[in-house]
Image 1: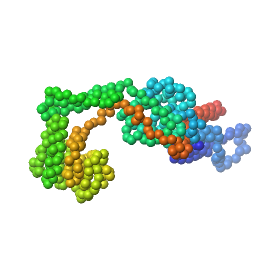
Image 2 (image 1 turned 45 degrees about the vertical axis):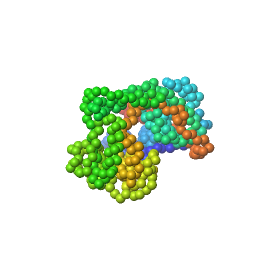
Image 3 (image 1 turned 180 degrees about the vertical axis):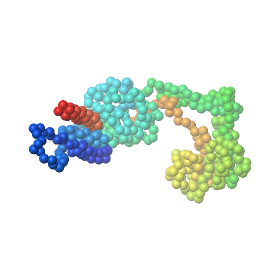
Image 4 (image 1 turned 90 degrees about the vertical axis):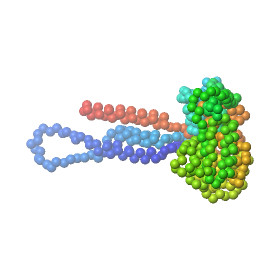
Length: 445
């Protein structure tokens, strides 16, 4: 069945009125009659004869056909036919880099009637010679596979060939109705060494953390060396006017972070605005008052203002209880949430809870310093150096049988662009040939 993806372009067919109008406007030259004498002719009023007849029918039809074909081409025509195991053997999906690794298997499948398709959300039909030399689409594998059940029926054989890098497997493992056969390989550059972190310690020395990544995992090793560079400290200021108890809990957790990392951290606690340092890297504003505009800081964590509500929940992913929060409609990305999805800390560092046992159990939790460490010194995901490979037992999505899948009849879209371009070229060449031939005949006459 014919289907147009952009049918609005068919309005362009109204353009066939242009060549029709031109052909109607074209006036044929009058005939010349030869007479022997004009003595018997009398003067008469000048009359003009117009012939509103269409001339050169073939040229007119070809020019109208050109406009129709152009409109049809711009409408992106596709031919839809049912996709079943009776009409096709199956599909082969692969990354370009996987072909040299699995060439015998892939060639054998293609020779038996399988079709090669691109491994992206379009799953377009392609050929080996049209494959790019590099994988330009870096979408996670599982996310891409979620589009495949919309293209093929559940019992349709699909062979997939990809790498096994763990960083390409993100999110939850999907449940899919597919007849999937997945083959993976380990890329050649399977080992990486790099300098992950470099920071100053309290004794003015430098700690260098080196990373090592292989298919088996990623490890970090640190060593200390004499400082040969600027050893500026990280300056943290805690301001609390009436929440002095909250400040003490936060100060203790900060000291734990300092002792664990051995970083050069200067922690200052103040209760009055005039005591604030001229500048700081982090300002923890434990107050209901707004932060003065004159305060200079790189990062500021502040308490949200509003009426607190009592609830019983847990911080998401932990067993830490939450007793009070300040409800918000803030749509900013959340760094901390509770079990009901309520925001506790946004990525612009607004706290919708307090660092107090009356509000939550975080200040008594051993995970509190760890959360502060991740907040102050977030561990960057170095995907460039990540060489870990996924366990084959975790690779496959959860596959359901065809009986549990939807009984919707899948359709295969066959692109008609190449056919339209070919017809357009042939009609154009024929129109030019007839037009030049007609002009030549007129000139000769």
